[in-house]
Amino acid sequence: MYQLYYYPNNASLAPHFLLHFMELEYELLLVDRKSSLHKSAEYLKLNPAGRIPTLIDDGMAIFESSAICIHLCEQNPDYGLIPHLGSKSRPQFFQWLAYLNNTLQAELMVRYYPHRHTNDELTIPNVVAAQDDRIGESLSVINDQLEGNKYLLGDEISACDFFLFMLSEWCLPIKKSPLSFEHLSAYLNRLSSHPTIMAVCELEDIDLSPFK
Image 1 (spheres, rainbow, N blue to C red):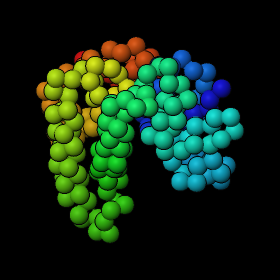
Image 2 (image 1 turned 90 degrees about the vertical axis):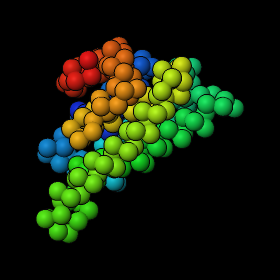
Image 3 (image 1 turned 135 degrees about the horizontal axis):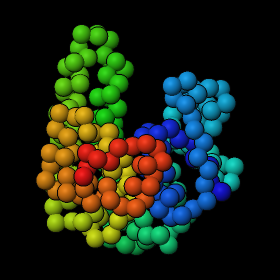
Image 4 (image 1 turned 90 degrees about the horizontal axis):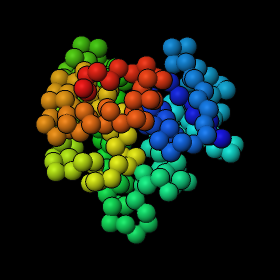
C-alpha cells in the first residue's frame, strides 16, 4: 500500500488523482500546513525540503509531485498514464510535465509567495502583477497546444492532464485565468466532469463549479 502525505489543494493533488484513477491501494496522511507540520523534525526526515507531497512506497520516501507522478505511472504502466518506451508520445509527455512543473508551477510559486523574491515590501504588488503576465503567457502556450487536441498529448489522457488540472485550479485568481482561453477553458470543463477529478475534489473539498 502506498502512503501519500498530503494537504488539500496542494501539490499532492496530482498524485492523489493518479492513485485514485489507477485504483491503487493507498492511505492519505494529512500534513497540517496551518500548524507547519511540514517543517517538523519528523516530516523533514522523510522530505528534507519540507514541502508537500511525500509518497512512501515500500519504505522508500519520494518527494516532488512530478517525480511521484512519474514513479506511479511507471510502476503501473497498464493504466496508460505515461506513453510506453519507444512511443513518439513519450518525449512529449516529459516535455509537457517539465513545462508544467518547471515553468507554470514555478511562476505560480513566485506569484503566491512574492515576499520570498524581494527585499522591499513596497515592490510586492509589482512582483504579483509581473507574475500574472508571466502566468498568462504560459497558459497561452498550453491553450495553443490544446487546439485540436482532446488532451495535452492528443486523444488519450495522461498524468500531464491531471497535473495541469491541479495547476489550473491554482490559476483561477490570476488576472487572465485559464477560463479566459478558448481551448483551455473547454478542456477544463470536460476534465471537471471526469469521475476521478470529481471524486478526489469532493474528498479534498475543492469547488469545481468555476469550471462548469
